[in-house]
Image (cartoon, rainbow, N blue to C red; front, side):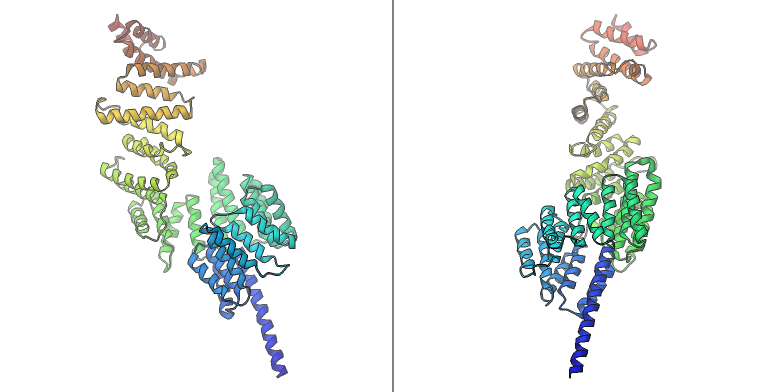
Length: 556
């Protein structure tokens, strides 16, 4: 009997050690961003020992991190039924509360999680700090407060130092974040994420070369630590964006490092989706289309991949595939639609309706424009993406269609392209109507909008002299003599103030001649002397100018 008891206790002790090793391995897999591996390990622990509340909690966190809320909640609730460390699961439920902006319920759940803890327990405060940070509505102040409680108990706890570093980083407190990450790595030299975060700080400060050196130090310690390659990829990407001369080489390095990162994850659906996300970021649409088609061929697929296939197919000129893929994604009520989905759908429809000469079928254009309007209504700042498409239409002299796009983008004062888009809007409207009958109501309306667009330009950028030139041209079409004179004279004054060097440029001379002739023509019916004066100014700059010569003869 005694032998049996001893044998039983030995089995229990052995099982406990295995469980501890497994949960440690699961946490290690999570840190390495091998989430599928972590899930498998945690599920095996729970199956072997349903009473393990911590395994349920950690598994719930994995699902919550992946935004699979229902599964996360199931494991948290299962964990509350466990006999060991069940209280941790209140922290998971509290994070869901925070995500839903239910702070009262979150506070109550945090209270339940810490109600019966021992005086030297720190894990609860670390997990609470992370919950505050990881919420879709992060609260870094409360995160820091909770993590300070953990550090008051155990000042050299590496996980608490790493977490408080993340909290400081989230709150844009770079100095305290740096110190916390450095202290975390000193406390535990195996905690590579802490050392990696020192490089992340450098990346955030746009010290890209120094960040890369820092990440390479992590690789020297462990070449198989996957997340550091993701950080390298993002650093090369940002370097390429911020310094266009490095773009080609650095974007290739970004892609290479991201592929290395993927090779060190578990190639789960989640990692493949992250890959697709990155390909969107670096605009590698050829690869994205290949990846998307491979994923769609699998039995289980995140529906978001249809969005990505649509984007990639559009960028690769496969407009039918783009339209079908995006429409298939949009029509499913449970899919989360974003403004860009409608933008791409609109672009694809317009492209499909464009003939070999670059002429867009009006009915097809209007159908595409309606999709684009839906996207802008859903996400007003999506207008920032319209400029390039508008410029493409403008370059093909599809001025009316370009104006229709710029009408959307030029209206948003928060857009980073507000000034440029108003310039293009005004010019597009001018050229769309330059050969039409100026008295037609729709032409008068369009030219009025063009004039107003340049007024906005002058408010945003008073030194943009070309605005006066275009306002003069617009009013020339409208035959408003007073406004013609006013705007062209303003242009001459502004351009003259720039000095002799500017005035000597052939392009500037041509515009001044245009201004003098337009002012002269405007005075012709009311003040012949003034008219002759301005035509003579033209002839000083351009003695062979036929219009000025003939006008002077007619007025004498």
